[in-house]
Image (tube, rainbow, N blue to C red; front, side):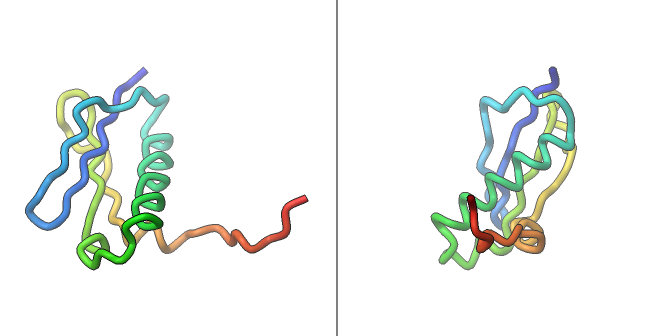
Length: 85
């Protein structure tokens, strides 16, 4: 199973994910990156720099598989106001 690393770029700073995570494919890596962003925004959302932050998902060789801007994660937030039974 491929290993993906979720590095966070905020301006010129890069916060490196040294461990990564084994996931089945890039689509799953996209889902994990989105969840990570939403969790960070819930806990640290008052930080204006986060709106310019990007998660850079890389493979074992350090090649960028996808870039996920924090603002993009906000565009498709499911409606959580629905009643749960």
